[in-house]
Amino acid sequence: MVSIDLNCDLGESFGSYQMGNDSLILPLITSANIACGFHAGDPSVMRQTVESAILHNVGIGAHPGLPDLQGFGRRELAISPQEAHDLVVYQIGALQAVAKSCGTSVGHVKAHGALYNMAVKSAELAEAIVSAVKACDSKLIIVGLAGSAWVDAAEKFEMRIAQEVFADRRYEEDGSLTPRSRPDALIEDQQEAVEHVIQMVRDGMVTTRQGTSRPIQADTICIHGDGAHALDFAQAIRERFLKEGIAIEGL
Image 1 (spheres, rainbow, N blue to C red):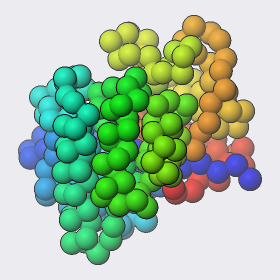
Image 2 (image 1 turned 90 degrees about the vertical axis):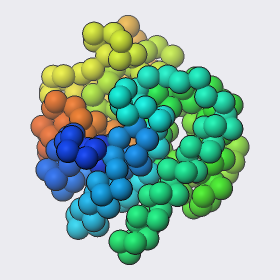
Image 3 (image 1 turned 60 degrees about the horizontal axis):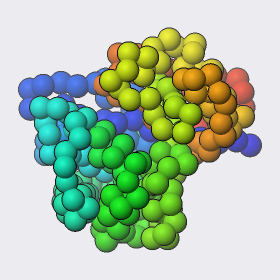
Image 4 (image 1 turned 60 degrees about the vertical axis):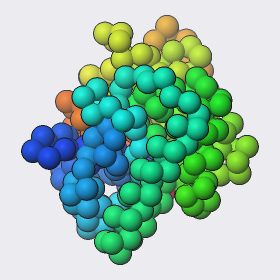
């Protein structure tokens, strides 16, 4: 039987600023990527999100990003591999402490936004981040873009990796995500998103923005928690998986 993990970026509120539909999405997913305070989140939000994930039996993952609250971690910063290593260790460590205080532990790590995409393009940066994850806990699972430098870096450092695909993002012919600067980067039609996901999970193929098809491995699907249609997409995808006989299982 084909099985898939559903992950979502959560805990991205900050102080009095509320982001996403965490309480409604948590019952629909199997893995939560929790912001660690650099691009979003704060200590209280981190704790609350961990507690909610425990309540819904959802796997807990660290979601380290660039130190850019105003830009929500989606603007590239000129950081060195060593700086990337250090900021990832710092953020994983913070969530590990929060998780421990709640009686649980962190199971996976997924970089956020620009940090994630910079590592897709740079093997050196991907290796710095993966080495940071391994330094924190060699049992952690890396979540990274399918077929990218993330996969090579995880293999180099003998770390487990879950190859990630995106329900609400279009792909380029080289397998990268269509840049958010393009007006057609996001998939906003629910039916299109569902068919897009089914093709990747069931058929192992993705149709690019240019109209070509390329192979892709899907171990986990990302549904962006701050997306306007995140809740509807999550519900529709789950319903279609049930009809297709695709099991939804955590990492």
